[in-house]
Image (cartoon, rainbow, N blue to C red; front, side):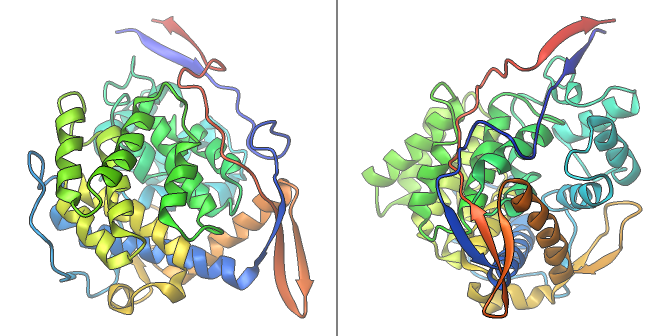
Length: 391
């Protein structure tokens, strides 16, 4: 069997030419924390609620789903949140410019199971001695071209890049390529750009438009998102008609575990949910496909947009501010979600300073002056990577 080795040249902190700063924006430190905390609460609540609906509805959307949470003793780890949990530990330990060698070591130290599809194959390849991004190259990983890991394991990069979508995208591009490639990496660009923008943007339609600007014109993922926007305009009060249109156009090529199908499903949920957390999560369960991934990603996005203080109490109270790690080795077995949020904020402060921002005191309160960025559309065929065969 031939293994394709991939050489990557990635610069993640200051000095990027793309996403040039548009303006300086002020973000109070307490608001940043509230939004990061809301992001993790929303992600955990969405994940826990969506799990019973995972891959349940394919050919047709499911029935209306009532609010009936079965998570009453805190959130438990799942691959929709626990890979981010590993990455948070990794950047704390190695810094934001950690190497792919360090990424592979963190995976092998902390991820011993409870992963599937492209993630499972990437870990297998790491154990054989192959390093990322070759572990996410379709010549080595036959799930890399479609799997939605580029969506559900990358949200952290948007949370540490408030108002800086270009920075979030560069982190997302590097870490998504650990396991996926091509259109699946476009999902990471789309969602991480929206997460970064959600710290300042409160309208979901505008968020989707900003997400679209983070995608290249020749991307099929972008076309699917644009189609969802068009279907929402065509069927403004009929989400099931839009979902049927999505299935009819894209399901033959893309399976229910794919980035294209699920990224589009998330977009329909956002548009028809109109920014209402409960309506959106319930709708995503009915839309189906890999529903728990979608409810987690979108739940986190709305959590950032609204902040913890703006989330419905009946969704977050059962979490008891508790994250129980039952899947990742050599990491805390239990942690307060609020503690996870504070750790993310500490990393985010480093990111904003590295990108020209400042931390100041104003009227006795800490604020961040952030150099805002625009999303950028990456190349679908990343020319900065050279692949060559080795036996």
